[in-house]
Image 1 (cartoon, helix red, strand yellow):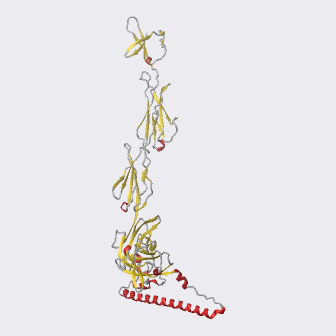
Image 2: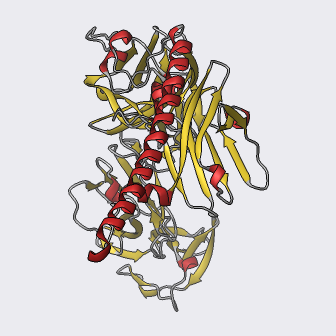
Image 3: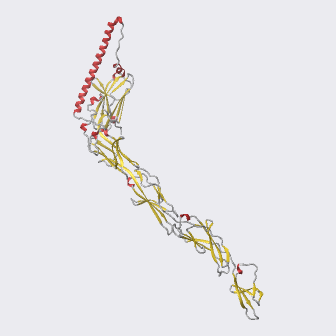
Amino acid sequence: MLQYDSASFPVVVSAFIGDALTGNFTVRTNGVHTQDGGIYRLGVNQGAADTDTEQCSIVFVLGTPQKATLSSDNNNVIGRKSELICNSLSTTYPSNHTLNFTYNWKINDVSSPANSRYYYSSSKKTLIIMNVSREDAGKRFKCSATESGDGVTGYTSDYSDEFIYTVIYGPDECKLSLSSPLTLEEGETSSTISCSSECYPPCSYRWRNVSAGIVIGADGKFQLEKATRYQTGNYECTCRNNATEYTKTHTSTLQIVVQHTSFFVEGNEGRNEITVDEYNEDVRFKCLITTQWESTVQIMFQGVILKEQFQTRSLSFSYNSITCLHAGIYTCGGNNEYGKVPSATIKVFVRCSPRPLRQTNQNFTGSLYESVTLNLSTLAYPEPGSTGFLWHKESGMRWISLRSNTDLLISSSGLHSSLTIMNVSQQDYGQYRVTVTNAIGSYEHYLFLVDRNEQKNESTTVNCTVETDKTGLIVGICFGILSAVLTVYSTFITIALKRKTSNTGTQSKEESTKQTTYINVAEGGTSRNDSGSSGNKNNSIELYTDLARSSVDDKTTYDVIQKI
């Protein structure tokens, strides 16, 4: 009788088929099922005695291994050794068999591709990646298991789910969006400054002002709005990989230089507008440029270079004797190999009494019954303004004060005044006087209005055409007319000269107590530089000293100073 042992008790399977004398027995089953596996024993009954076991056999029913699973040692860090492990469970019954698994790998759907960095254990259960690199990132790994033994090749499992390999790397460097050093002008707003790095998982970022010791940005970006000189310094960006059991950082430094120019008059630091008295001896301009590089520095007045120096960061310029002509806008600036440096300006006001702004037109012409305008521009500070100009008209031995009315329009503001005669009449011709006054002093300026037609006639030659039979009479009449014209003209000239001489004498007496010499800004005698050269105001070129001679064209050149 043939028995099958299951759950520790025998089950009669079938009677044997064979020859008992020779011990040749055969057992047949209809289909093989997992439950058919186990121990089969041949038992012999001899009479009523117990059954004796003569022989036993174990039947193993091969099964398909369970679907493979793939795991990692989580050492997938660039440069390290990493292992991938494939597992499966046997379904062969009973389980006390001696069959083993061999494993198959696919990488990106290619079976066991050759790679100098990939190694396998003896059964290929483990795939070893030596020196993990970024090229391993994103690769798709899967595996299967095949059961086999001595002379037996079993079944192969299904492939595992794909394992997408990730590589932990970075940061190798922090890349800055702007190169160092970054140069800004004071007041300038920088573009957005950012740092970045190639990392997995993504890095975190932090900006820090090293000079000030403060954190200024935690998202990898920051911007300087209206940069100030105090923001000059080193700025540091730290890129950090915060992966578990792997912390790596990298730091890059950006140097920011905020260029600025300090321009001031000594004794007036921090002020960009100053007022000084004429002939002040202590007007010294100083320019300091804060920059990383030496530069070409210039001090200019009204756009004209007063002094220039190369390969420096500072420059000084001084006036020995400042005059009203030196009032205006002074600028300090320059350039270097990286471009222009920021400029700074100072407005200088010079307190001075009024005087002509330039060689003005003394003579104006007008025609009867037409309008004409007489103009005057002055140089003075404080400005005379609307109340600082008084107009007079000479009438015989008197001066008549003029006011705006229906026939006259007087317009005064700042440094300028004008008199418009709406409808010129004969009595409007002659000499006018303008008295200009400010808080420092005053002066008188003289203008002349003449008939345009008379001025033309003065240069016209009188021609007499005579008939031959009345030559004597006509010549006598022409001679008489010519003599009368010459007599009137000489009388007019004599009176004018006497008035002019009288005015000159009066003005000279007034000026004898207070002589003022005005210096052209271009004259070297009014300034000094670092080389020690200086001038003397007493040796300067005289622009005017006697106001009564203000109508004389002495061809003196006046510099024009613009209203500030």
